[in-house]
Length: 248
Ligand code: VGL
Ligand code: ZN
Image (tube, rainbow, N blue to C red; front, side, top):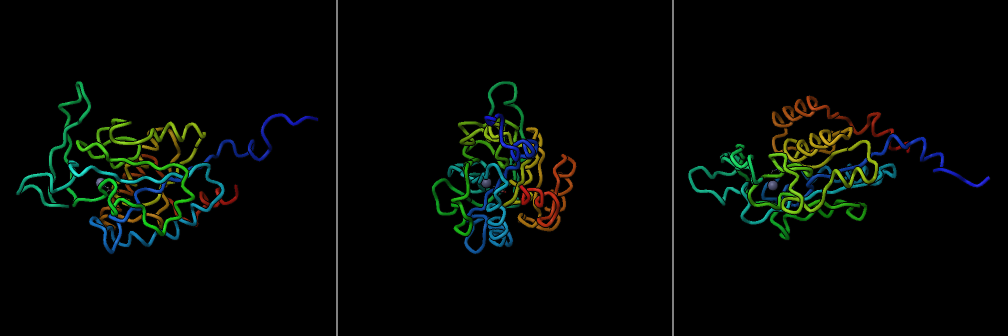
C-alpha cells in the first residue's frame, strides 16, 4: 500500500514540539571582561551546549541584547546626579504613537553593554552557535528597554525597530508547543522572555541550572515567584520535562 500521512513517530509526537531559547549569553554579561558581568555567567555554557545537542528540539533560538550607543538604559545617556549605573532609575516613555504616548515606566540604568557590533555583544565562543537555527537581536530601539525577545517593556511588538524578527510567529510556523528558556539574566531577560512566551500561548519552562542572574539571591528568588505566578515552570535539568525531550 502506498504510504499516506506522516510517519508514525511524527504523529505520536505531534502534540509535543519543544523549542529552546538561549537568552543573551554574551560577553558583556560574563566575567571576566563583561561591562555588566553576571556572577558565574560563563559557567552555564556546558549545560547549554548539552541542551543544544538534544535532537528533540524542533528549533533552537539564540537572542542577543543589541543596543545603539544612545540607548535609554545606559547610565551614560542621562544627567547627574540621577545617572548611577545599577542604582538610578529614570522615567521611560512608551514610544508607541497614539494614546499610549503618555504611558511611562521606571527604568533601571545600566552600564553601557552589548553595543551593536561591539565585542561585548558577541555570544561567548564556548556556546556551539552552529547549532542555532534562529538569531534574535533585540533592544535596538534607543527609546525603550526590551528585556523580552517577544516585546518591549510596554508590550509593543517592536518589529523592525526594536527587534529583527517576530519570534512568536517563527515558533508558531514550526508548530512549537513548549518553549524551554535558559541563559542570562534570570531576573531580567530570561524572566521577561519566559513570561511573554506564556502570554503568546506556549507552555513555558525555565531550566534553573542553565540560568544566571544579576542578583542571584533575592533577585532570582523574586523572579522564580513571578514566573510561577504567570504559569512558567521552573524546572531542573535532571527532571521529567527534559527527559521527555531526550526520549524524542
Ligand atoms: C539584560 C540588563 C540589561 C539581560 C539586558 O540580558 O538580562 N539585563 N540588559
Ligand atoms: Zn540591555
